[in-house]
Length: 219
Image (cartoon, rainbow, N blue to C red; front, side, top):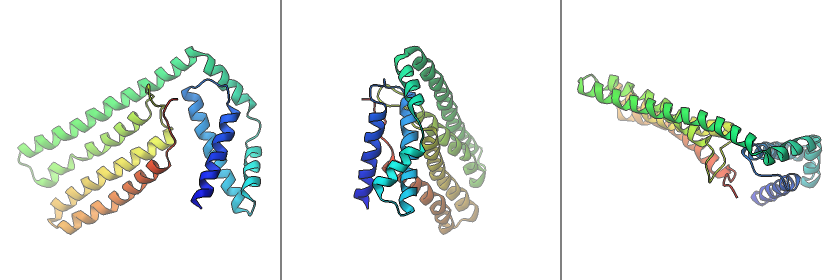
């Protein structure tokens, strides 16, 4: 089963590489390739589930995409137009930078609040409650860093980056809820139960994303 999946991935990759052969590399091209890869994979599997052979299912999936010559021409033009690439990269970099700064500040705000409430000698539940800022800041920081294009890597697809942010948010929220529940009830098993519920889901999503992620390295 796994071998068939690898063969399908290779077919899709070879088809897309041939389709965009000679097109200059760009963030837009990387995003488009990833989108077409996902569509082809889903459509091929859908046709296979109807009882069609993999080769025929792959051909049907390609046909269902329609004429892509317009997209190829557009990507070729963008690949040759360094000014458009620069504008696109600058815009996304600014959005990512704003998110990175905001996420970092929210995390620091959470830590400072926890420290302040601790030295005010408030109860443990009130102190740990400020940890929710760390959860929100961690998720925002994760999304912003992954959607930033660097010299070595293209920016991650926004949906996948959002799922990464969700997984990190769930992991952090699991620890947050464990602390609040543990201090509120004084029962360790309740804290563990709260941690387990969110942490396992977050870890499962995170592991899936790592194992299925495309190579974002620039060649």
